[in-house]
Image 1: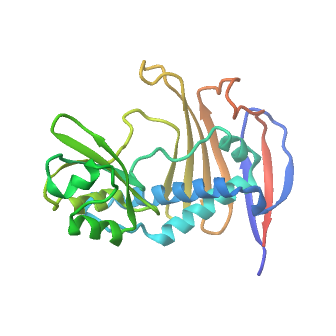
Image 2 (image 1 turned 60 degrees about the horizontal axis):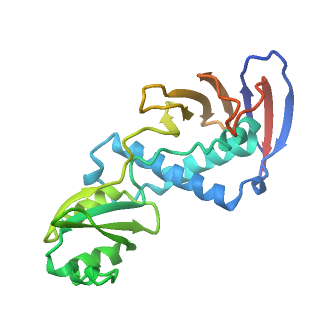
Length: 261
């Protein structure tokens, strides 16, 4: 297999430049981090689909090709760029919107199919309900009292799925009142991806401070990954990162050349 040359520049306030040749050694990506990147890729791929139509009416499966493409980009950026490795120390991953792994069903507590749940058994007496669990490889993770007349169960998937579309199928079951997709109301760290004519733009967003008190702050890093295989660090900006944060690092301007087999 031939070599792919990935070139990118890390911009910052310092004028000093240096060129580094780095091997694309995947051993620096731990299994835990790889799982996070794969979840990030699945959520980002699903966000792309949400631009076309309401996710409730789309396919339950997330396009695998888009997941693989985005995962490869996230992993390559991390492997290739020490700045990206510092970014990872901030635990910057996709904000949990849309849901790719769980949702909460709120239902009438008196419905007969839910009686096993009242006895602490994580199953139902509804064939339709159970068939949906089996078809999409779902489990009942938790059962709680929701209010005076309704209970709630958390449904979790074993792989990333379009959970808005999955939840929509449960509305046909007797007693289901509403669905909560579990999306937080307050923003947090995030990754954004945009498809351009001949490249991808990747943005890492670090949020800190009190967003509840309207004192939230944001720091952003942007990369561009072209279809020809080059990777560029585009910009870094926003509010200064506090010294106390784990991801704080010295800023410098660097040019990297990555040789990948």
